[in-house]
Image 1 (cartoon, rainbow, N blue to C red):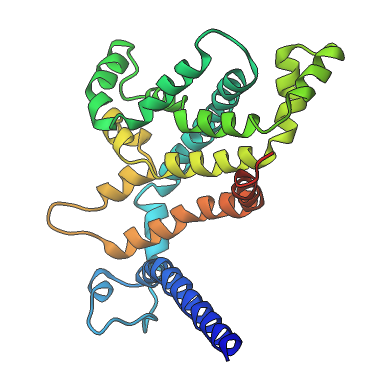
Image 2 (cartoon, one colour; image 1 turned 180 degrees about the horizontal axis):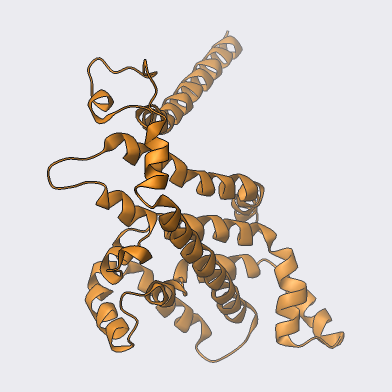
Length: 280
């Protein structure tokens, strides 16, 4: 009798777990489906009641509008340029710093690492004005280089790399030194090939962050020819009206590169999460 009750309780808990997962999944998927549906409607249909998921007459013109009249190609290329450059720089700087904090011995290493991580707790609004003043003194205002400089170093990337490198046995470094490799050679030819999972994770996190960044481009960019997708979407909203159909169409296209990146590196992302729970 007790065994039967335990089995029944286990099944009920499993059903509740699946229902919870389904509910959470739907809460995340439905907004994207709404955005996709709205991208084929005009502004009046978007908020019509009752809501219709499939419009009677799909407006494919919304997609042609953003390419022809909203200069979406320029916005797309600007965003892609910044995302690629900043992601590569964060990967290089994060892996080098993470290797130094993990494998090199130098005075006050742990204290310096904690101090560096402490910068994660400082709100961006606190450093926003001093940072802008420094960039202006450097003569980089209204340039993409301003965004590249302020985002080339990411404490979170250093933390991820350092934590992963700590799990790689030091014996590999010692063996590499015996074979005549320098520290940089060990980092490049031994450690990095073993770090594909954390590299994939950092690529996903960095590219999503840069691609969706709105505040930094808003602060540093004034010329429309330098605008990113996020600023372009904001410009499509005027003081008295907003073209919600084209805005949704632009939003749909904007998530495609990020979706491709995630699908490409999903395997490494999952490996990184799985290995983070394994010790020894």
